[in-house]
Image (cartoon, rainbow, N blue to C red; front, side):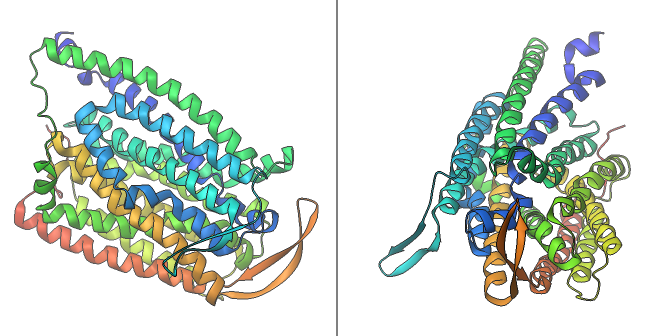
Length: 467
């Protein structure tokens, strides 16, 4: 009992309750992130979007994080103000962006829009609804990434020296349940309500519920602060701008950040286009096709505890990242083969991708906590997420433009929600090869990280759990 009084984190039940609360909010957050991923064809048919419009909207997630450095500021806020304040602020920002996103696709905005500055076309002719939705998604992205780094720091705070990799992996993969639900629930919702915006309305409701759950976490976390203060545990040093320079001089940190952007650029943008790719390559209806990419986060949820526990008990973090990146390349290369177009192959490849999706994050995020001190961890996570957002912003737009310019194979008339619509057909071979190239580069940086770990002795290949 005395030990529990000294540090609430030594109570296993308290630690895991905290993980459940934070992870539930992550799940609600990711549902809103991916609620429009299965709707590419319906957005093109119902709102006259092109693949480039869809890519433009999807790239909006990273606009403010990348160009306005909002993620860097988020890290500073996190290290200065703490997890509780930052988390609640992040959810408020997400709700604001979500409401704009809802307004944009609810049929209130019509026409085309383009932006030219000094004869330079900043925004190509695009559906106004796509531009406004992208703006809302950009605001949402600021809050989403801010909450992501806050959640990671919260888990590290409660699980350092314990089951850290397992906890971070479970937090990440539980959040991916939201992605899975976003793969197969939006189309049934639209059919039930007749509204294209119905999935976003449900997303906003879930995020409000996530806010209430996170507020409950803040009470528990505040109690830990009080107990540590009573026990005389020294508080972390406050953030200083010099911390950014110190983090920037760490070569291993940049290797992990490069791995992060390359790996996630081959996963998250793939998820955004996966439903349409499966519809067109495998001849499956979009109502059913969403179930296949949904297998990815579900398989990650089942396997992440395995790899997280392996990293905690046996180590081999850098090796796990290398193997996961190799699997990623194999999956995308096989998806690019035109003759591999049977339904069981699609399921098998997505399941293997789920294995890769379990391996790399379960080792990558705890590895940052091994090479960066805890008082600088929020800033380090923010910088990593900032690098990642270049990929989350640029790759979806790249894929959309490539589809429109090089991959159109024709058009067909198709019955969509009771109306005959003209649907564009695409060949997804080139996009899959692009994703595979990102995976190859991820392998390179995984090897560089392993070499750097040998030189500097960060312990990435050593267990996390201290005996």
